[in-house]
Image 1 (tube, rainbow, N blue to C red):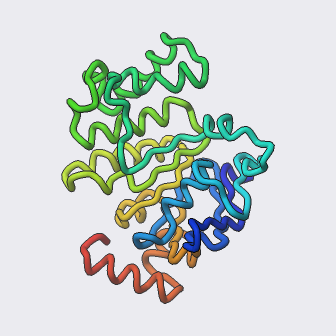
Image 2: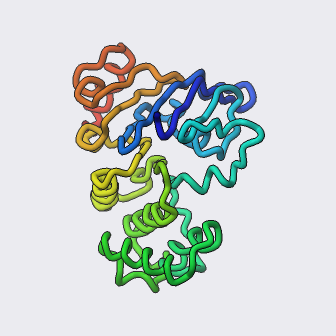
Length: 247
């Protein structure tokens, strides 16, 4: 059984139909990279998966449970997911340690000492243990994004949803964030990641899914989708990526 399954997801904003019946299954301990141009629906699909947007049609299943059922407790469902967006969204008035321990203590009811111990271990692992008492504005963009990912991991999610987590970073900071995602993936975390980093998708993803105009046109192993794409639109997209030097 898939950890996360999207069935026929449709989402429109007024007359603008952004997702047109998207099906996607994400198995445990697998990494799925969502690729596609701006406006293809990648971010909206992740927001629908995390119930931050209400779907107009279709189902989102988490561990086989239809979490789009009106009777489902959306807050309880979100507690089982870790979500990181382009903007770091760290609380500026809280220290790094307090940012990471907030959800485990307030939402999940863990003791402050337990949450702090785990948070410090996570921060040490990514080389930011010495920044625990710092405030976000004292960190680089790459450091802030890594803290945001650790904050998502601190709730022990069933699935980690990453939405273009490197797009707001200076090029020299991208590598440190991708290195953390690579490490998290190697440890068995289930990840769905919207990304423009094709080289990273080729190296780390188990499945690459190409979205275009709100339709999932092609998905499969990276070697197939990125190396021998079957759909003409996938080939056209990748040619543009190659021309831009991103593959």
